[in-house]
Length: 298
Figure (cartoon, rainbow, N blue to C red):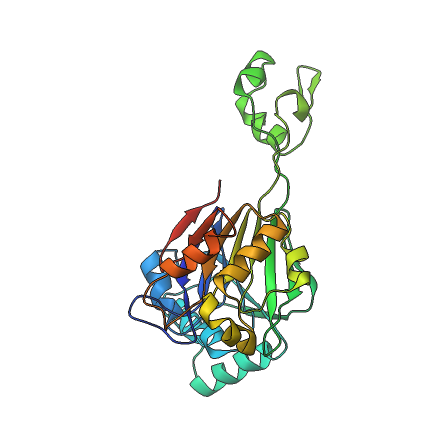
C-alpha cells in the first residue's frame, strides 16, 4: 500500500506543484482523493495504470479539487478503460458530472456510478471501510478516513509442512478455512500467526481544524492535512477556513496520529521549508508532500 501525491498546490498551480490530487494504491486498486485541473497529466507521470479498479472521492466542489475529473474520465476512455468507476462527493456531484459530460459531448468506454456523500460510513468491502466527516470550509466539504480491516496472521510454511498440508490447501487456511487431510482436521490457528491490525489513513481536504476532525482522525497511521498557510498568515487561514502548518501539527498531536503529511500549499510560498519548521516545533513526524512523492505504508 502506498500514497502517491499527484498535486499539492492550493487554488492555483505553480511551476512545481499541480492542483489537489492524492492517490492511495492498495493491492492493485486505486483510491483517488480530489482531482484538480490536469490531474490526468500527473496520473500519467505516476504510471498508476488506466484500467485498474478505482474509486474517486471528491472532498468539495471547488474547481481546484474537482475540475480535473473530466480530463481523467476522458483520458481513461481514450485509453479504452473497461473497469467500472465509482465517484463519491458532496451533494451536486451527480449533476456536475452529468451536465459536463453532456455539454462536453464525450462518451465513456466504462460505466460510472455516482454516490452522494453524507457523514458516516460511505463505502465498505471485505478489506477496507471508508468514512466521511464534515470538514470546516466555505462550502460543504468532507474529510475521509480509510481503515483496513485486520488481516490474517502470517502463514507459517514450516508448520504447514510438519502437518503434511498440501500446498494446494494453503490458500484456504490463509483465508480462515479449516481443512481436512487424511481424516485429520487442521484449523487456521495452527499455521497462522497473530492477526495483523490494518492501517488507518486520514485525508483532510480543505478545512480549518475542528474538534470533530481531531476525534475522526484519532490514531491514524498517516494523516494528510491541509497546510495552506504559515503562522504569519493565520488570519488569512481563519478568513478562508484553511489551516496553517502549525495548526495541522497541533491537531495531529492531539489526535495521536503516527505521521503527518502536509499538503495544499499556497502559491505565495516558494518552498515548504517554513511549513516543515513550524509543524516540527509541535509534532516530530512531519513530511511536506511534493508532486509525485510516493510513500510506502508498511
